[in-house]
Amino acid sequence: MRKKYLYLLFFIGISGVKAQNCSDPGTAPGDLGCVQFTYKGEQVTYTTVRGGDGNIWLQQNLGSSKVAEAIADEASYGDSFQWGRWDDGHQNRTSALAAVPTPNNPLGITLGSETYYTGTWWSPNSLTDKWEAATSAEANDVNGCDPCKALGSGWKIPTEAEWTEIVNSENMANPATALASRLKLPGNGYRSNTNGNFTFAGQRGYYWSSTTSSSGGKYLYIGTTLANPSSGANRGQGAGIRCMKYNPAYCNVSVENDVEPITSVSFADINNVTSAIVNGTPAYEDFTAIVANVNRGTSYELNVKGNTAGFEHDIRVFFDWNKDGVFDMNAEYYPLVLPISTGTDAVTATETIAIPENAALGSIRMRIIKDQWNIYEPGEFDACLDAYYGQIEDYTINIQERLDTGDFIKNDFQIYPNPTSDIINIQTDLGIENINIYNQLGQLISNQKATRLDLSNVASGIYMIQINFENGQKATKKIIKK
Image 1 (cartoon, rainbow, N blue to C red):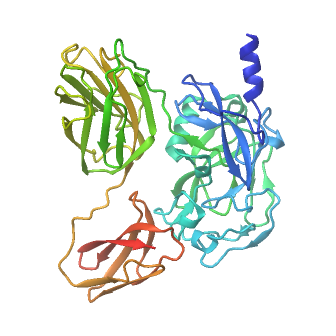
Image 2: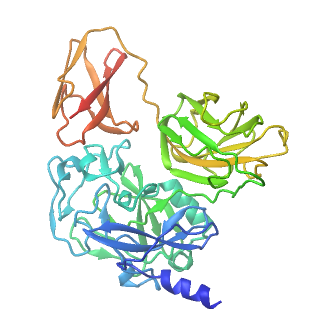
Image 3: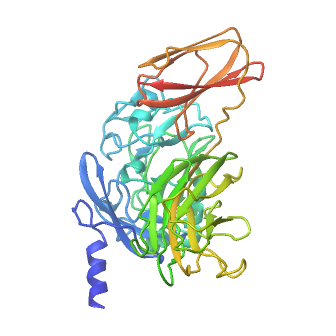
């Protein structure tokens, strides 16, 4: 009991303390952990918690100095962000006021602005606008920088659907139950975009989601008699940020006898080669830090090698397409066979994996189990059953919307210069409906109609330009930003 009590004292309420060996919470709802990251130019340590939805959440608001102990706990309120903006100083609860920038969208503040905008920020309220860019340098006219991305891989501002799930799983119905939940949400109030004053501070909670609405953006409103994740407000209103990371508690699995290892996995961006020595590596290896970026509706070849120690092996592959933390044998299981192999020869188990059109977007889990052949028959095993002789590896698959590069047209058009350091010109006799620019993850970073594209504010790398013509045709071209 004493050890558990000291553990809780260490984690609850720490912020700004350089704790050692931060790690994610355990798998049980309410388990605590911590995360270190840079905020306002300084390294901070925040408490994290496993929510009732199975995901990992900050247990304190971004910019706060502690976990809330009361609804009106001012030290727990944290900062007040405008929708689509990031950690540039504007979110301080005492930041100065100023008129909106030109252009009136994130592209107008890519270098940062410490002022809190009055008036109508980022209008009109296009439903295709996003708040998910990884850095301020990647922010543009249709996408703001997500301040939660500073916490590390997988961290993000929750969507309306994710707020709905945690509200239901934690039985939040008012400020008292929101504070009593595992997330410890205080009544931070909201900041006006007309006079900069705060309303309902210490009484009600206001927390942005990354979901847009016709009024500007969706937020979680915690009022006297309800907790409503579907509330909407103008983008100039200041509200709190509570970051989350999708991380369901997957079942543990191991090997009963010798670890006859998986030695190579290749799939999309994954190309992971490991030891071929029997019992030379752990029975289970967590490679979820290795990410394969794939697109919905597109097929990719999976290749798996391994040391079979003289026996044919099954390769059982599972994808959690719907992100529910469970591997469904009927819809998420792919069986392969690996003939006798040393793991370093040319023997490979191969399968073409089609990413479902309805697969959940974002990070999902891929599990590969290598097991001695014919020990178990189908129906006698699943992704949670220990292997007899073999090994298990988990990876992360990042699913994006499909970027169709196959619908090229034969009409003459030119894109130049390519590579470029700043400006791209498009020359064509056809009328242009719009032009989309995508990064390598398939994320839309710009949408416009002008045939002169300014890429000076985007990071170096490879991008895809998709031209949609007025006649219904389209063309896609790869470009390189130096």
